[in-house]
Length: 161
Length: 324
Image (cartoon, rainbow over all chains, first blue to last red; front, side):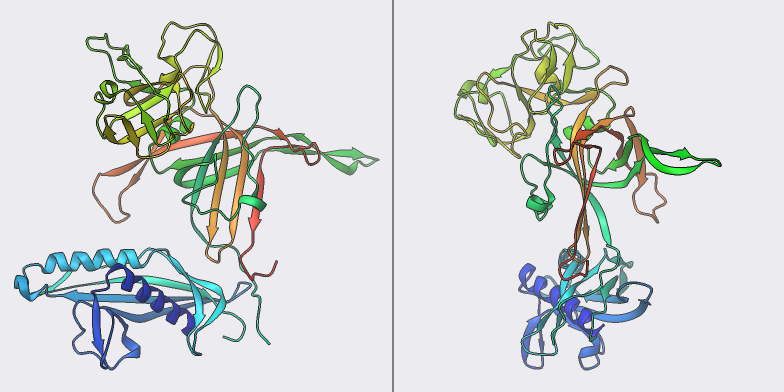
């Protein structure tokens, strides 16, 4: 299941780097595309703004199939205060931009499954796939606008996993 | 040892895509789809002459063929089976309104509302049309050459129909799709352009002609073709004409597998009908999407492989590395 989670994250990260190369985050001295997996970083408090944060929550398993299917629920959180140059008055536009980016990087709704443990990553036999995201209502905390979206990521367990 | 296969469960597909190709009505010759040669096509750019009809929903296909046992002995027991009737039906909802989807979903002929001549008396299926303009040589499927004075009559955003003048012929008319069957000579010189499927949206206009947003279904206009603007489409409940087309439905599985349903000949078997779909499952508003409902009957073709009469081909291209 870790391979599916890694593959989903890397697919979104690579797509984001193409769609908006300016959305980046500086983490541990390295500038990376602005999307991170919460459980793979030091604890955030609070969550970073203008960045997508992937949080893995639910898990379901269906073993009554030719290959076991795993359904892993991913919550994607993002927030913004807008930009300083506009005094934060563009925070609504900034959040809309992140909404649109998230819709775009989720398509197409599949990606090849890779094992990222070795270097370079090893191609596996199946694809990871998911459906449209379910977006939550906007949350306003003073000048901070935040939203999350839930995606169920599906994958088949392969031999050796 | 490297693992090179997996046990593929039942395909998981998000939605169904439909494609159209013409049937030569005069010879009852359908368009063939070869899944072995053409099965890997990109869903957004099907192989010619297939044209995408977009995504569809509520796709249901039903075999209504009947078999009966041949009984023998006392007491009678089934000796073998025979196929008494061959029948299959398809129903679906088109998620977009286009010339093609509207025409296929209607139970009878489908017409273009040609832009009317100034002062023409009104008519339910379009008034007397403004005079057609001549298509010049050098036109392509994406560009229609016109005299400068004719090009000036159109603007980006215009919808146009291109086909020949009607000159009194009877039988199937329209290119590349037969849009009507004329039983007795008519008087409307624009009749073929009223029923033609050869329509397109104009994306740009220059002094030399019109650039189209999408290629013409019939390809480069033939010599003698004429062009008219149209304002929309109209169909009727009634009439004696049945639309017929070659249909291809594609389900793309989550693991790269594909299921094809190829109906060489489909005819409409129900009148024009719509379905409404509320926008957003949780929405309490009254806005609803209006979908085209369609129901078809499959007609048989002779499979040249063995001479059998068949209605439909179901093909499956397995997932890469999936056990078969």
